[in-house]
Image (cartoon, rainbow, N blue to C red):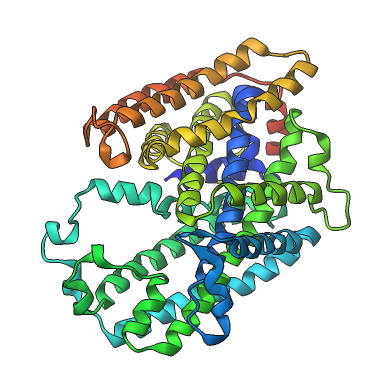
Length: 477
């Protein structure tokens, strides 16, 4: 549902780093800077998370020749040698993109074969080896022993939201896509459907394939370093475990390479908003690669790895920052229906006046699910970008100061409100339990719905609105 809102906007404005531009058109440069900063951070944080994932999987390799990898992790965090390996992988992500998007796409296509074929093969082999539907349980207590709240905790903090955010890459590379009016929609819908089918099927097969000796002790007793590989070893399928270990290392490389392209496009497009140095948008090379942005991303990624040394913490940071950056999408979609009814919409979504506020509420809930204090920590990271904006806005004479401040006020109030509810909310989500589950959800839904309509009402015809019209005039229906 979140992606469908972005399908409509993305096909209206196919451009490089588009996710960093949409908010500028309807709410001005201040909110545009906050949204683009959050979007860039959310994309950028995926580079270290994928480097850490590959390194973490390498540390579980069981072969004699790979003993040197076992020291990559120390008590669940990167050791000094693991840090060096992760940084080396960041260099790989950067320099594959350094030459061109075309080289990146060909490399990613090769890795995509592993990411599709190996999971399907794994499921088939495990089902043939052992599969027991009784493992799923006979009643709600067995199926969901920790209650419904644990579902939402998993979505926000166990990597589920993070697993689906790659649709942003399709939008951020809009200028590099053939027939964007069709292929942005196709790329997003097909990738989400394929991902969902594979992810859900893998989980069902994993639960069903667990031996009774493991199931009898309960899920809390599971302690697998590489879950599917360890399961294959339990079932004496050693060749499959070898294949899984290899693919578990290769698969994050593909994501890291793709997100390196997306994050660099996001950063290189931000100088168009005139609140970052122009050199970041420099692409004057034979391949049109934003090389300065790529190198800046490399440096910041290395800093992030030194701050967050394990996958779990980085995953929550990515989920929260991504969701905060996505908050503006439904607001922009609703505002453009009011401000630009004549704009070309190759993928016009029916019922947007109903869908947009629902999506806004869902994103707000998902930010809450990422758990206190992660929500507040990510908001602080986003606020770090404000002095840069203030410096450049001062140089430009604080133009449109009042309207753009008013157009941004809802966002500030919303983040402050979500932080407060997160602190007071259910202990299931890291709060003080002063507002227990599910009443915390009801409070967020009421609060977020009010904020959505305030946000749409605060939109105005910014000076960037004509840029949006020029881009939209080139769109083919």
